[in-house]
Length: 187
Length: 364
Image 1 (cartoon, rainbow over the protein chains, first blue to last red):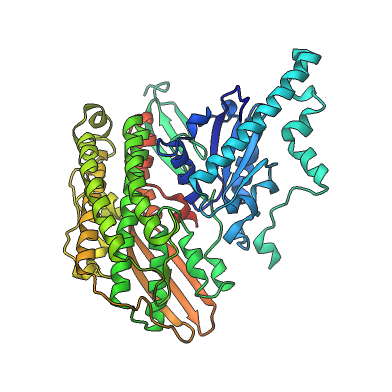
Image 2 (tube, each protein chain N blue to C red; image 1 turned 180 degrees about the vertical axis):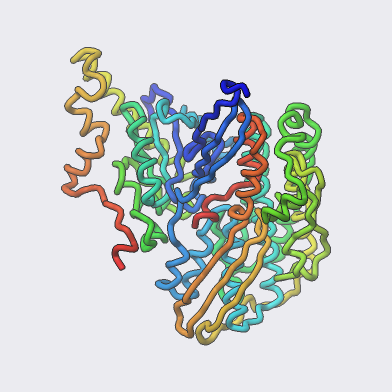
């Protein structure tokens, strides 16, 4: 945290959580907990956001929205999974419409446990995300400085590994993004 | 007919939107700035937790029922255990009933203050938003002190409750409630007299009493249109022993909804005081439950957002056949769409917030 020079913006999305973590995310931004003292600001526009906070275990319908939000964010970007559902699926792991964790859809950098995650732990996760964001921004700037302005965006070969392109992320793990299985077909 | 002026356009609203903590999608059909039709679509947070009842036994399922929604969590746990208790003919100790009532009202205070904050945020009054949420934290401190959790209480079980509110805690509760009441008066005054608030709320999104009956709206949303319907009046848990009247307003606009919900917070404070004063000194907080549920039962609960209906069907094993939940937000969505017709596009976010949408309950 010591050498943080940037002020990243937060985007929050509820991907089929029970709502408990969502209001805790909001609570952590209000004056009692005040995450804004770490330089983060809540925004609703994915194109201006740097840190994505996702709650909930992701279902078939919200998976598309999460992917879209992630793709719309500019590089570098950091993803925080808030709450135990976002980490693993939590109590809803066995539900027919739950993929089981945000990392089945997009790569996740910070996992915040808890049901519902407490504002203190959410702030801890945000602070960790800010540090990761700082590190990535430095790398990104250095690369652009060396290779010129045209190297920004997708032409950067390291960008995938560094910023977490979903496809490369899953290749590195040696697995495919989890496909949603239709409950009716199983029967 | 002027074709150009009548040209219609469809504007998508959500699922990700600044005023929405939870996703709902609306297709707004606009004629210039006027909304002429609204097509809602839900399902972004459907988890299918009703089906889990076949794979978790009826005691475990209390904790899943509670996680239907993080805001009205206590009510969902309460509705489920009441339904199972009805099925198994369990009589809960009187003290447990009072404790449930107190926690239920604490949940209502937290939910309504949260809503008031979101409402203030929706019409751009940032300061009021923060004040409401700051006040809500005082209530959450009480919840944390008595149950150990901030949002998910986990104190209900089939046959009673798991935790007690000791005399020391009661003193702290009464003390904190007095502080909340004093500050809430200021917030109430701002909501009902401030010029900029009234500009956004007076006469916007009017829902008549007839429309409430036709469209089946419930809870504070219906009470703001003059319908005196409060399920707490049925006297479940300890509500039968407490003295209260449904909070009603007759205007049916955004202003009336603010008014009703904030007055309900005062009412909840009063109910907690009454419950603490009347609570019997018993040592047993729960009764042992033997056997497995068989048959079917239906229970109605007044959630912060309105009437919720719980249906359970047992088959004599420890797994229930069916758990069904009708939530207040689902009942309020048709009425919400009706109020939007004829409104300006700029009022849409406000009208969505004004039903106090709890999409997690709705979609489960």
